[in-house]
Length: 472
Image (cartoon, rainbow, N blue to C red; front, top):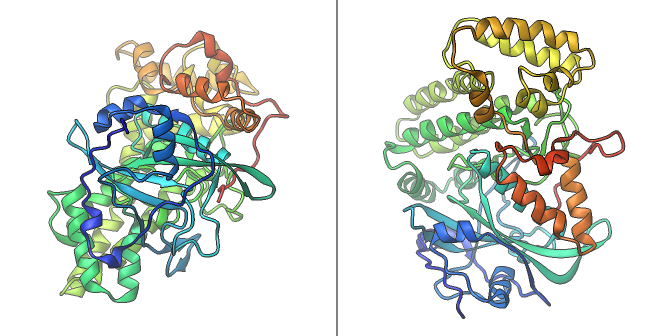
């Protein structure tokens, strides 16, 4: 086999309490749909024959050096604690240290049942696999910390959801798959030895400068604060911000019912399972603080001086809203080409957002076109934009030219929900051209791509996506 993956596994060397050793389950007729050669090069992976890659990335062939396992974790799902979750349809093949010196997990999603499947079939259908491949790579191109996609494979089998659908497996790459829920499960069980071991492992792997459990908490809070501000800067809604989907590394993980806002409204919800708006666009900052409070509660359990630990953890978590607001303000200043910081900037930003809501303006296109006719065209009443623009131009007096700054901070291309759904519908019929084209365009979100201008268009009334789904 010519495919070579230079495994260097560390998680698999932890005690068995953290996982169940488990091979992926074979599929009938794997076919490689996509392989991320650029990511493979960074990871030091030498590609092989297409047939070999289809075998490995479907789970039919476990490559030399792999140590397949399903991770254990628990978590709060929409605020309700589930004492045991775990990888119910995924297997961690192992880890590699790339040519850039970074350690990354390689995980197969949709690879069959595990002890944590809870009655599920452990499989994935083609739609969610292609969505995660496309959107995670788009997020990477946008400069937002994220898991990535190495490969997508058709299985040649059907999976039964609301109907029979083509099966697929995604190869996901992550800085690690440690989550808030990874700590919660051992804290809830009173397994302090495992909790301490996991804490030490997480610090060594992700935050080697952190000192002890509270140092880890401080580092994760800072990373998650930056991440959520970046989501909001591109109009991204995660859709399922449960604690088992909150990564210790500070990466975006799990692209189930995620979506990007078209017409801006801060209370926008797409996820079909988020019936009460818990994870709406404007609640994501609040919810990530709630998630990190659960991490704090877990980490405290291993501390000898609990009272002091509670006091320090409270201080760390209570600082998060200010960190998120500061990151948000820096990011939106950049989106308005405000290269210095002045009092009143937040009011100017918020005034634009309020006018966008009233004017039913497209989020991405408005920021991308600031200062031009196309920006005012986004508003049902363009004069509402005119009034704001006059204030913005007065604020920018004496600053460097806006054009280059705006282009650097505001993407023209995002994975618009209707285009993603159209791409999936085509792929189900065997046409992967829209998938490959979207991937190519979204790899350059800040570039002028006139040949792809139609991909910047908001959905027509009949194209609008009202709800997104987990795909499990």
